Image (cartoon, rainbow, N blue to C red):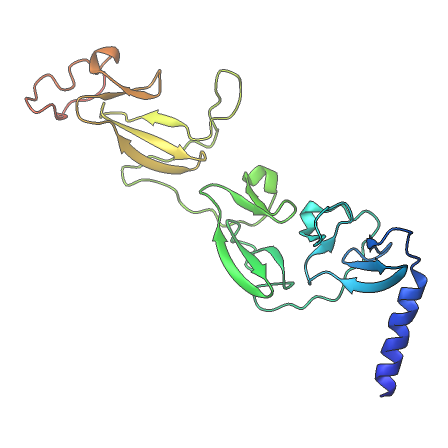
Length: 237
């Protein structure tokens, strides 16, 4: 009974310290980012966002609790004590894999229930933005680098090609060294894929598209000796 009286007194004191504005609504605490006050008829009730979320007074919705990377807490640096489990440092939010070497996997935690999410090939998870970004933007250290090499030995170049405007090409393509019909694509610049044009066409490195053989120097006769228009044992000149 004494404990209940003390807790009630503390809550009453906190409410008394916050002075409600004339307009009813929800208002932020000046020190704790996940704490806010709900004012009704001039009376303040202290409330907390779900663990992992923070309060944003600027949100027009009734629920003003959002992910930390969407909210500028400013000087409101304090937070409620976390309620973690094995995969969720807090009950709600987007969190990096607990193994610091695994940079392309993260967890979406909703009330302590974790869903594993894998970034698109070549990207790393960035906790500051809650999204998958280029490794340079994420700036994470100690990430495991997998050997990304095809069976024929092709691997994506370390330097990302740029377009005529000087912008990095998201998924650069490369001609096969000996097969006019085949070409490589580097997904996000790092994940190699071996692809091919449809029968009757060859890869045009200049246009980065499949094209008629007569339009690609060195591949004009690629299908010449095949009645079924299938690639023969020839190579690029």
